[in-house]
Amino acid sequence: MKNLDWTKKEFEAYVLLYAAHCNFFESEEEEKYILSRVDKTTYHKIHTEVVVDSDEHNLNKIQQYLSENKFTQNEKDDLIRDIKNVFFADGSVDVIEKKVFNILKKIID
Image (cartoon, rainbow, N blue to C red; front, top):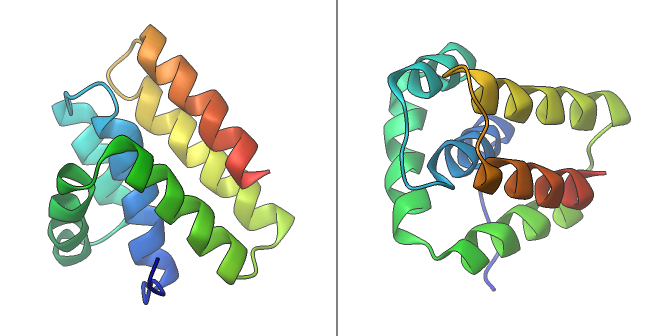
């Protein structure tokens, strides 16, 4: 896989948008939360990439970026908290979201 030349904000947008899109439905609340974390330009730039990539490709990109870039434990903890906030943004967490959260938590930790 080619190098990912994302900024950390673009990576954050990718992970959060992947989390929001994992059940093929992004709620308005999830979108609002993500936009509170990243700017609109980054959101729209990354959104298309997340939707076009396959599930496997999404996870591979996340794993690759994490292995190529240094993250402090605090940054990892913040990212996991933000993922959790995306899932809870619409007031409920479905089975797919729970599964994806556990996968992302393993990859990030």
